[in-house]
Length: 526
Image (cartoon, rainbow, N blue to C red; front, top):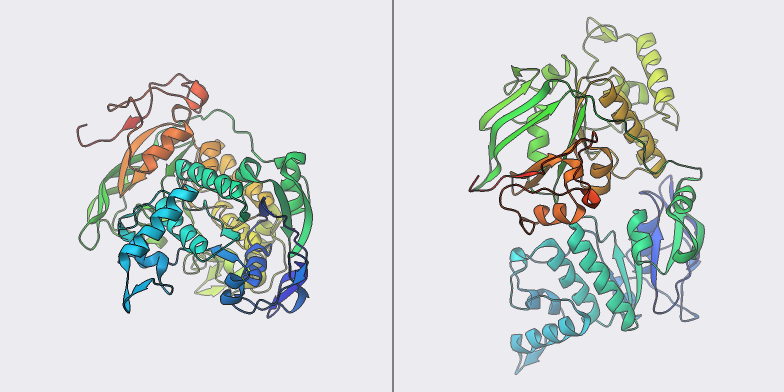
């Protein structure tokens, strides 16, 4: 891909990007959200038309105006959000649009044989007759890969493929990628994760602000160098955390249950977060994290159980009343609860405090006080991009603004949900440092994140949520990544019978350097 340009209104998504991919390699396209990775690949797959540039395949100019053109050129794409019909079987999904027929009727036996053949050949183990709704996320991803391979894909684009996988499922995906490479396939792997880039890539191209910032063999670079290319400056990949100095419990959930249509979305959840500690919630997305966030923030009243803040039952209080005594909520970027894109930086930074002194009087904002607050927050949290509508800021600056708004007033109970999703590694460093500073000041932090590395780096204790239940809880140092992956998938680690004694790297020590007895597994028999 040579000199690719693509603009969406005022946003230059691709600004002359170049990408060279060699046959039979795993090529990682690395960059933060908004760097132009997905735009470039959607141009290659025919979902977007480029404004300028050239695509060459095997040295010859290719005109790709649609996904059909891409597939005829041997290009397949597995999207981050799968395009499967839940009620269909694996075989029905894979052969949709190219059904084998016999005497004018769809030959499902032939379809199942075809899927089984490709499944064996490429190590994509999945039952052709299974319904998609009964498959794990990792198995559904294999179905998407099979769809592309059966349609003749020689170049396979994987868009953020590990975003919703457990560690074990990610390892299995990497095994499949290596097997596809051994079969002569070429893979373009879109990600923003440095660890998995180093684990699987042959070559890496880094995109920043729509341009290629560098391309090199993975064996000739380091995570630190890649991070610098991603953001354009030196960054600290892991912020050091001093030992926790724990105080009394400031946030408690007691037997909290939230009912959904035909099932419990949260089931008898018991958690407590003490002052001076970070409790991380680990789990595959969609297992009750949203409901947990809504209950703690005050957006949803539990059907059963209590929520206590500093010993006070707040289950009937809404978000505004919970904010007043010193509670903060960093939401995961949804417009209704994160930044308001149409409002200015000053208006956004005062949201949640705009009803009273010192920022308002008799329902009217006091502009000098609001301006002073905006100056302080943008300076401390390094928010760049001007004072106009927040929608004009980059994703990282929008998130830093929200984090600044929530943490500037030194709250003592903090609900942080996906606090670094979609931001660059420089912004991650800033946000992690601020959360650790709040912890050092004695705040209780409940951290809900889909990023296992983030949870392991920041949390003093971890709780694993699966299908709305807390299935294990313990000091962070007592969990291994393998153990977490099994628990996140609803499986019991080997040798576990209610309690486990294991440490990260076998240390058996907690986040404060003390010896621990192991994480408690919540099971039906406990």
